[in-house]
Image (cartoon, rainbow, N blue to C red):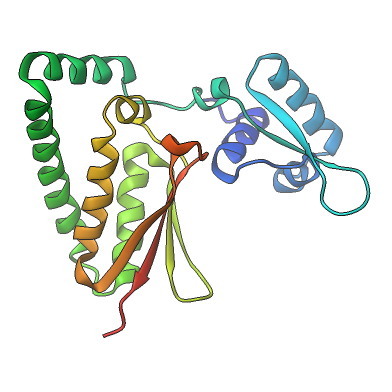
Length: 210
């Protein structure tokens, strides 16, 4: 997408979730009225919608978020072709053949991730390397350290979402890969899941104190 304020607003809604007009204006150094006009146009195009959320007393807070059409503005890695191939494999070779295909993909991905994260000597370093890998693959990934010492890996976009919806073993495969790459040094759990209705996928990584 072109690097305009409107596109940056859509990107922020994608990566940060629902936002108020004032928050968007402060983020990009423009007036609330300018943001409002851009959001009204994006709403007319079907890209955004809003909800009024009450927080304590006073007027409800209006939060803007992407619609399904808005999410579709971000790449989904040849979704129709991938879904078609998965369905063809299942029709031709059955579920067992599809399982073998996913297992082969998982093995190749695991080897690549191990090679890249193996240079890091700590769990935090491995999570950082993993986030960089996933970001390059189109997942808009980032990570952060939490106050309790755990780490959070966030994927703000799923470039294989359509394929994963068709074959959810792809998602289970990725969780298994993360656990394997981080080895016995950390526990990994998925805390947010796009296919379960969340706006993103997120993983909590807890280093094991030895």
